[in-house]
Image 1 (cartoon, one colour):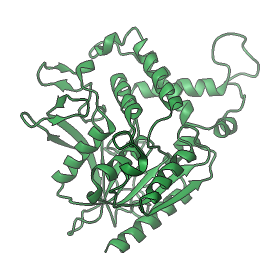
Image 2 (image 1 turned 45 degrees about the horizontal axis):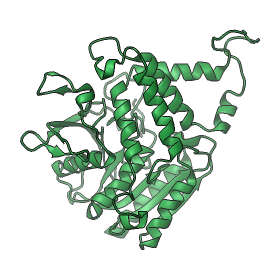
Image 3 (image 1 turned 45 degrees about the vertical axis):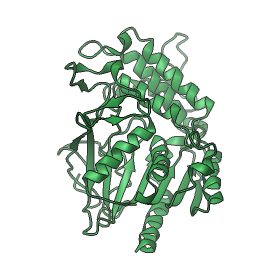
Image 4 (image 1 turned 30 degrees about the vertical axis):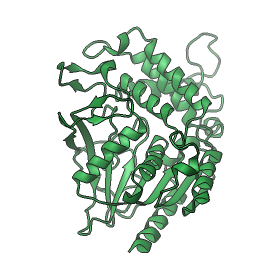
Length: 380
């Protein structure tokens, strides 16, 4: 925790906005307010307020992207490998912001939050939220921080979807954009995996139509949903290299229905661990927000969605990512270039699959660091 490249101990902050009667109108047609956003910041905002970088998290992420919330913590923030002095998002140069999305369960308003009108958790009375809604509330946070224009917005997976929505919804507020391992819309296959995960949760007898707060939670259903999701984040190559057909704590098949293989034990561990840190209803809502995301839909074509973008882009994909394969990133780049936007594209060769953006990568760090440095100089 005392490493020279760590941001050290950080405190999660909370902003309450959209207080009645100034609720925000969501894309689904319902209003929501008050809304709390949990967020963290790292580094110092420059006097000109021109060095702000907004980090956007994936499905199960949080505002805690770097450092430690308290002394003695074993695990740092989810993107600590990228944020800190001397790292890709060098906190000696940049003011880095990360907030938990609405609909989440890590401090921002979501289905597990208390509905002020009833004094009870929202549960399924919480309105459906979209990627667009998430971005609109993030813009309110950026307003609160007094920042007129972000130097960069960056995120992987669902975070990349938010990056794309930012440059379309707020073109004059973003100078640089880095969507990583993402897509402009989910494929039918990706939606199908999300639906199987949701069905696992909703089939758990403890789910009780989302009204399980203060009672037994749907542990098994959420664990299975995470197991399904985790498979999509890996690649065949990485699973083969890590597990192959190796057995768990035995040398011969057990010829029973218990775990024989290491990969089975690993998935069960991942599922059980996830239950202790995430809310089942948030999983339903956030996965549905990803399903609804289709950047081109309101415009007809993707290039029309990008018609007014002003940002410069670094689009990154991973060769073994079969959840959001490289051709989806290439489609984003092609659409950007057709409208004259400046877009650099790189496919990183890796066996780690979709989750590669969360892992240590000299190439990823170098790409981002150079893009930020050149982009910042070009804007000055």
